[in-house]
Image 1 (cartoon, rainbow, N blue to C red):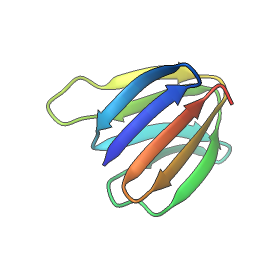
Image 2 (cartoon, rainbow, N blue to C red):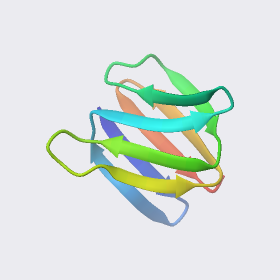
Image 3 (tube, helix red, strand yellow):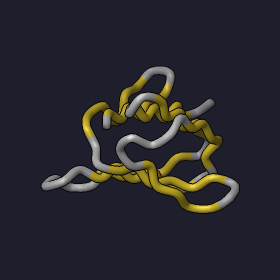
Amino acid sequence: MRVKIYAPFSIYFDGPADSVSATNDTGPFDILPRHKNFISLLKPGKVTVRRAGQKDFSMHVNQAVMHVKSDRVTVFLDV
């Protein structure tokens, strides 16, 4: 799946991934390849992108929205 994490003036991550982990009002969750369409406000905390054979990418978010559609995960920061 393809993951893009960005703010209005910066791109923090743009590339392939095996999973994405974050937290919303119902608790921690993971997005895996072929996940159903999904949109959620994220709670302040860590978003982690996992890639096989590479170091995980993690960053703290304060205000964010995650959108998942057609094997693409987009995280909009500072919204």
